[in-house]
Image (cartoon, rainbow, N blue to C red; front, side, top):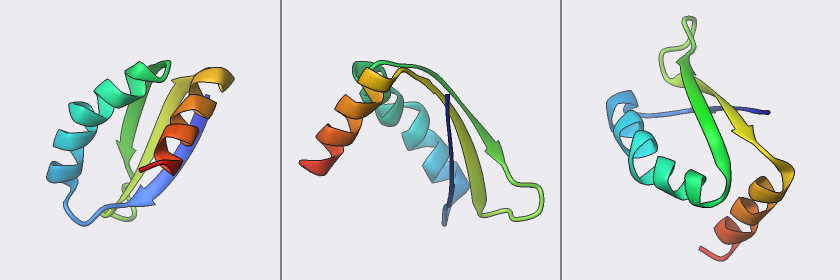
Length: 67
């Protein structure tokens, strides 16, 4: 499991991309699932809990480095 947090400018836009193109890319790299939570104290902050094995996460990180 990996927990990540970030801020987003437009949550609806983020959610649309994260749940479509982003989900496809994560799945290609072994991500089993991901749940996104909005921070109730900061509307522009999101928390994401990824179910990802080490090998898949490493392949995703390597792929991102080449973008």
